Length: 473
Image (tube, rainbow, N blue to C red; front, side):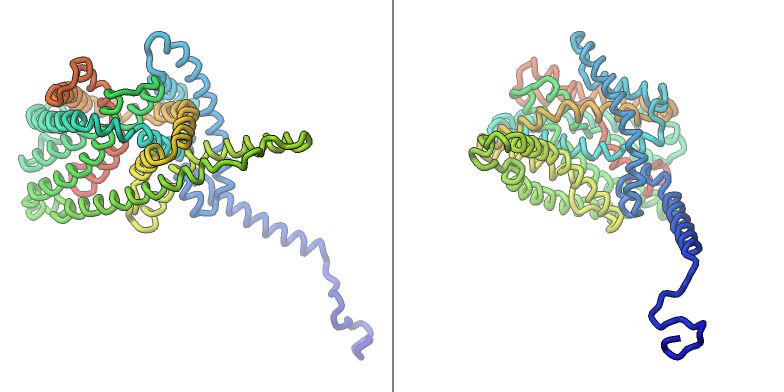
C-alpha cells in the first residue's frame, strides 16, 4: 500500500470496487417503483379538472388522458358541422344541430364519449365562456347602447317582473302536483321555495344568444337590445338572489329555531350581496385595465417593411407573420381560460374567487372595441369572427355530450311546471316590456325567442341553496 496500509488495502481517493450491475439494477428498480407509484396516483385526476392536475403534479399524465378524448370530440364536431351545414338550408340553427349530435354521441346516446372522457374535457367550457364574454362585450357598441338603453331597461323590467310573479304563483298553486318535495313542507318553507325558484327562473344564458348572433351575423337595434338585456340580467339576478335569500332566511328562521333545519342564517344574504358587489367592482376594474392593454399587446404591429425582405429570408418572414397572427387569435382563447383557471384556483385555495371571469371578459371586450383605434377595433372583430365558428362548434357539441338526460327524466314533472311557467311568462314579459318601451311590434313579438335559454349563473346559484335548506337538493 502506498500510504503504508496492508498490501490488500485500498489507496485513499481510489474508487472502491463495487458491482456496477448491482447498483444500476437497484437504482433502476427504485426509480421504476417510484415512477409507477406516481403514475398510479395520477390515474383519473384529469377527470377532476386541470387545476387538480396542476396541484397534483400530474400535467403530463393528464395530457395523455385528455388527448384521446379531445380527438373523439373533434371527430364528433366534424360530423355535427357537416350535418349542420346541410340542415341550415331548412332553417335549423347550427347550435341546435351541434347540441343534437352531442347528445347522440354522449353517454345517453351511442356512448362515443363516455362520462369519464367528457369530464376530462370540462376545461373547454372555460375556454369557450371566456371567448363568449369577449365577444359579447365587443358587440356592445357605446353609441348603439345609448340609443337603445331605454328600450333595454323596459324589456328587462317586463321580463323580471312578469317572470318572477308568474313563477311564484305557479309554484304555490301547482307545486303539490308537480314538485313532490313541497307536499310535506310548512307554508313558510313553501313560500321560500317558490321565491328561490322564481329568482332562478329570471336568469338567462348569454352564450346561446351570442352564438346565434354570431352565426347569423346579426346587428341592429334588436340585436343591441337583446345583448344589453342579457348582460344586465346576470347582474340583476345575483342582486335579486341575494335579496331573496334575506327574505327566505327570515321566513325559515322559526323552523330553524324549532327543528334545527332551514335557513342558513340571516347574515348569509347580506354577506352574499357584499361579496358580489366587491367581486363585481374588482372585475370591472380588472376588465377595464385589461381592455386598454389588450389592443396594445395583441395587435402590436410588426415593423414597416418586415415582409419586403430579401429572397433568402422571405420564408422566415412569412413564418413570423403566421406565428404572430396565430398568437393574436390564441390570446382570445387563453385570456378567458386563464381567468377561469384563476377563479377555480382561488375557490380551492382561498374559498372564494376574487374576480368574476365572465364580467372581466365582457368589460375587456367592451373597452377594446369602443376605446381603441379604428384599425384595432376592426382587427378585434375580425379575430372574433374567425374564431367563433370553431369555438361554438366544440362548445355546443360538448354541451350536448354532457347533458344528463337521466336527471331530466327523473324530474320530468318539475320540468313541465317550471319550463312551462317560465316560457309563458317570458313571452308575456318581453312583449309587455317592448310595448312599454315603444318598440315596434315586429320586435316585441320576437324578443322572447332570445331569452328562453338558461345555464351558467342559474346552476351556480342553485348549488348555493342546497347547503342551507333541508329541501335544497
